[in-house]
Amino acid sequence: MISEISVHHLKWPLRVPYRLSYRTFTCFEPFLVEVFDDQGGYGFGDGHISPGSSSETRGGGWAFLSGMAESVIGLDAEAAKQRILARFEDSKVAATVLVTAIENLEGAALLDIPEETRLPLLAPFNATDPDANADAVEPLLEQGFATFKIKVGKDVEADLARVAAIQQAAAGRATLRIDANRAYDRAQGIRFAKSLDPQGIELFEQPCAAEDWAANAAVAEASVVPLMLDEPICSLADIDRAAEIPGVGFCKLKLKRFGSLERLREGLMRVRDNGMEPVLGDGLGSEICGWMEACVARVTIRNAGEFNGFLKPKDRLFAPPLGFANGDLVLPAGYRPKIDPDALRRHDGAPLHFSR
Image (cartoon, rainbow, N blue to C red; front, side):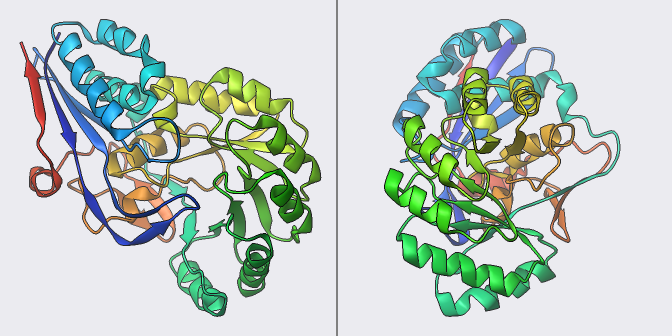
């Protein structure tokens, strides 16, 4: 029976600003939930609501967590999860935070690491000055990264020139993922996608607004590289719909949009069953999110993970920290992380506590 829940709103300053087409982040502000049961069990989960990424707001997420946490005190774990997921559409991120904390409490098998696992990570390509592109490539390669993510969506011609410069500097030593973060309109997306040199480019991600399936389909038809949908993919039905669009070869899933570890695993397998390739990860995710997504990735994906958000803050939450070496996230055999209480205190706001 769930006996106590603590809800936190954290603030983690980043090493360098993280630029997206719709927002530049200087810190991550995830919600973290700790769940305790009457047998001494403990679990935690977290998720980051990114303003501008969807209709969810941080205020709405905090209200959902506060109300729902209080309402599941006294329930067993399964009943609590069902109550939360019944209101999943109210706040997908907040619901997922609570459910994954309970799954962690239960000792979910997907979080078990029977043997050391190394998962290649994607590296965000932060250089924006055309003259700095070559200089930015070499340090990433030296760190062991073999897949780079390039953000576009500001200006089609400038974006094409920047991608070409990075291709030239990488010289086949790295695979490129291009991400517009929904910033292009239909015409811009088509012009960009059909003008790319496909050499070394794995995919082109989310050119147009999440709700504009027709515009994204038009870009997919024109594109010289496979398209990947991201923000619209929140359910099995969304995956099935994406599979019907010619030119869509990838779907990216994020734990915070799927409600639970098991639902995320099911979604990733559904992508492959539909003849597409799944990609997993939230670049805005914390160390908790990165760990959980990596555990699911271990048994579902076969490309570079995007669960690299844990590398961006100045400080780390886990003791010992989540492992990273030579471009890989490293999960030692038997790894089950613990939260560093001192790190939590340094970055916590005013937490709420609910108990019987």
